[in-house]
Amino acid sequence: MDNNNMMNNGNSDFNNQPYQQQPYQQPGGQPYQQQSGQPTYQQSGYSQDSIYAQPGENRSRVKEILALVFGILAILISCCCTYLGIGLGIAGIVMAVLSKNDNNGQMPGMALGGMICSILAIVICVVSIVLVLTGVVTLDVTQYLNGL
Image (tube, rainbow, N blue to C red; front, side, top):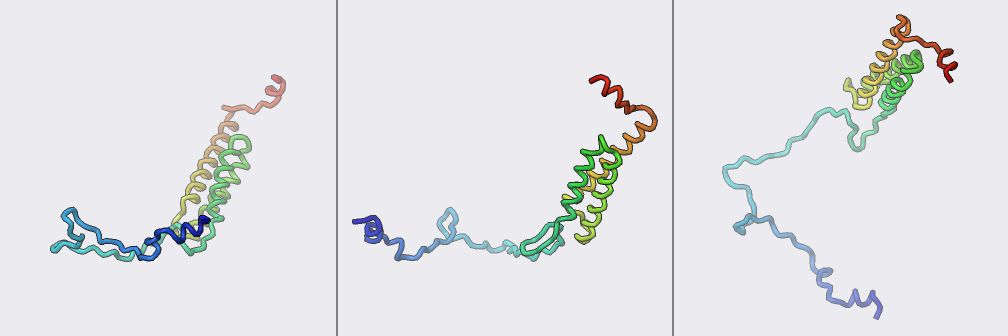
């Protein structure tokens, strides 16, 4: 006898009878019911405007992502190319504000992170420009090249 016939000819009462679930019971053996005198809690509709995409909602997150990418790149570039860092920082701030306008005045997490990174990069760039212009930091590349 092959395996299929053994499975079909065996005692398979579980296939013929439907599953019936017993009601939940308290430790005393009685089914669990709402006790008298206790208020019943009903779930009310929760309506709050959310900044996160709900199921079935198509929301473009391109501006949020660009704000974060520009902010991170601005921080990375701010140490060596200050003017490019300022430009990327401004672009990150603009994308974050545009993302806020698209989301009914609420700034999503990535856009907020991009705004913070962009502001930090601009501050780093301005501080480094001030340090170079005041002479606190010198950019003598010939001394570095002669040391090699």
